[in-house]
Every structure is written in C-alpha cells, then in structure tokens.
Image 1 (cartoon, rainbow, N blue to C red):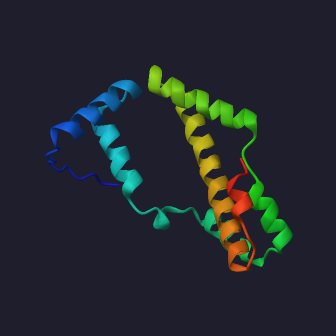
Image 2 (cartoon, helix red, strand yellow):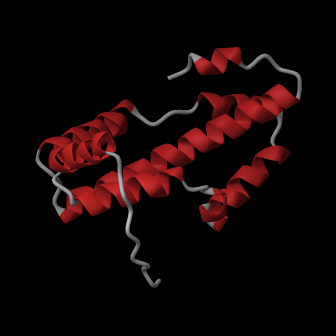
Length: 137
C-alpha cells in the first residue's frame, strides 16, 4: 500500500505529549502519531470477514447463548500476559516476537469485547435488562 507524506503542525502541548509517549514506548514519534490517527479512524471497513460473519451469526442465537457470550471474557492468565506485555512495551520496548504476541492477544481481546457488546445489544433489543452484563469482568 502506498504511503503519503504530509506536513502537520502540532500545538506544543500535543507535540510534547506524543514525544513523551514515544520515549515511554521506545518507538518513533511518527509511529506514535500514526497509531493515534489510526485509532481515530473508523474501523467498520476494517473488520475481517470472519469477524463480520461471527457478529452476523449472533442474530440467529437464542437468548441463553447470547447471555453466555455476553458474560464471556478472556482468561485471567491471558489478561495478565497482555497487561505484562503492555507494561514491558511502555517501560523497555518489545522484541518482534513479543510484539506479535501482544498484537495477537489484543486482537483476541477486541474480538471478545465486540462479541460481548453485540450480544448485549441483541439481548437489550429483545427486551432484556442487560445492566448485569456491565459488571461482568
């Protein structure tokens, strides 16, 4: 995919914030700014076909299965591993293998959260009180 160079003037406070973040994460200033831009961009068009299919399939599930999915979370061990990688990335940086693991775990986390959110929405649309799902880890 081709890249496009742009010139961007940042206010001093914003520049300092990105500069500090780049020092904490041991990444370039450009990478930090690109990540912020990417995070702000719409992800609707970026969902993988298998994730779109999984979300669409939720509509055919019964309420009991939606409740189960609405409460599903990553295991404590996986959550702790992801947290440790985030701290290591912030404090000293990650090697390529660790960064790949972090990316894979983040994808798993995002997938879990998206499915939970969609399950809760469908249950709410079906007239259920889903406030209890908000307290679920």
